[in-house]
Length: 315
Length: 315
Image (cartoon, rainbow over all chains, first blue to last red):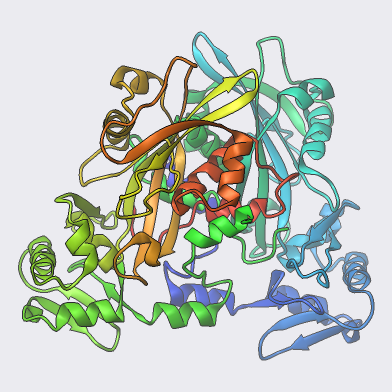
C-alpha cells in the first residue's frame, strides 16, 4: 500500500537541490539544456541519449550547441520553425516512439521571462517531453455532498489508451495549448470527455489553484523513458447535485464511478490512479480539510511538493 | 503599489538555487548550519555575525564546530539543555535584541527525519530566529458571503506591538508550540485574540492546507536583521454569519474591520498588511477562485512560492 507521500514521490521524482546537492547536480548535468535566442535561462532538459539520436541527423547546422555547458539553442532563423522541422523529420524517420505514437498536431507554449523580447514560442505537444519543456493542463474534480458524505466522480481510462490505459483519472483533464485560456479549455474538455454541458460548467466550476511537479518518465507513460516532464495543472472543483451524471463521450474514458472519499483513498493507496491525477486528488483533500496536520504525518512536505516551483518561466 | 508577486517576493525572499545557483550558493555559504547529534542534514541557518556574538562567550566547550563546513552541533550532554543554556546566558548578557525583547517562555519544536533516533527537541521561541530554525503557526481567515459579495474580517495590530505594530493582520494567527496540535492552537488563539467562542470555531473552522516560505528579516520585524526565518503556517477558513463579530480580547489587536475583497486587495497593494499575512490572503484568494490564471499573470509562480519546500524536516 502506498502512503500519500509515496504517491507524491512517484510523480514529483526529479530530485531537489537542497535535499541532496550532489545527487541533484549529477543528474542535472546529465541533461542538455534547451535555450532560446535572446532569452536567459533554460527552457527544458533533454537526456543525453535523446540529444545523440536527434543530432546524428543531418540538420545539425540549424542549432547552436555548447558542448561544455551542454546548451542547445535554435540557430539563425525562426526558432519555432527550426524546432518544428527537427521534430517533423525525426517523426518521419521514426527515431522516437513518442513522436510515432503521440503526434497530435497540438501546439504547446514555451514561455519567456517578462522581458518583452522573450516572446512565447510553440512546440508540437508530442515533442515537449523530448525537450523536457514545461507543459500545462487543466484537471477538475466533480463531487457531490450526500447524506453518506462526500462522493467523487472518477473515470476509468480506456484500456487501449497509449498512456496509463485502464488507470483511474480525475473527473475531467486535458492539456492546454498555446493561446488557450484555462477555463475555456476546461469547458471544452468537460463536453468532450464527460458530456457535461457548457452552461453547467461555466456557472459551477471553481478555479482553486495549481498543482505542479517534475516527473521523470518510466515505461508506464509509453515511449522513451528518462524524459523530463515538468507539469503545471490548473485545478478546478465543481460541486454538483445528484442529477448530474458524467458520461463518456470520446474514446478517452471507459466509464465513470461515483466513489466515496474512503474508496478514492483506497484506490490511491493501491496505485489504481494515473500517478499525476493522484496529486490533484491529494490537493483536493488538503483544500477540503480531509487531509490535515492531525491525520497526515507528512502534511507540510506533501503540500509543498504538490506546488513545486518550476525551473522555467511559467507565464 | 505592490503586485501580488511583489508581496510574495517581500516575504519569501531567500533565493532559490535554480533561479541563480551562484547567488544562492554565495548566500548559503555565508551561514553556519545548526546540526543535531545523530541527525542528518541542517536544521537551521545562523548568520556569521550571530555566530561570532554567541561564541565569543565562555560556554563554547559545549558545542562542536566545524569551521570548514561551517556546522555547529551541541556537544556531549542533553542537546536541548545546551541550546537553552546558550540562549539564557545570551539573554542575561543582553547580547541580542530578539532575546531581550522577544523572550516568551514558549518552546518551539525542531523536528528530526523519520528515523526514530532523531527525536524532536525544543528551543525557546525567541531564539528560533537566531538559529534560523523552521517555525510553525496557524492563520485563519474569517469571512462572510453577503449580498454585496464576500467580506473578510481584518484586525489591525496594536500600534505599540514590537513587531509590525499598526499593520493589518489575518483574522486570527499564532505560533505553534512543541506538542501542540494545530487545530487546538487555533481554537485557543480564536478565544484569546478575537473573542470567538470555542464551540463556533470547533464546528466551523476548516483546515485548508499550509503556506510556507523562507524570510530574511529586516528592521520591521524588530531586533537583529539578516536572520533567516523559515515558516510553515497551517491555514484555516471559517465562514460565518453576520451575527458573528470578532472583538479584541488581549492586547494584540486594536480593532477588527469587515472589508470587501476589493478593499483587502487595495490594502495589500498599499503594503498595509504584515508581510507574511499577505501570503495567507493570496492563498485564500487562489483557493476561492478570486485570483486565477485569467487575471493574475504570475499565477503559477505565486501558487508555488506560497508553498515553498523547506530545507529542514517538517514532521
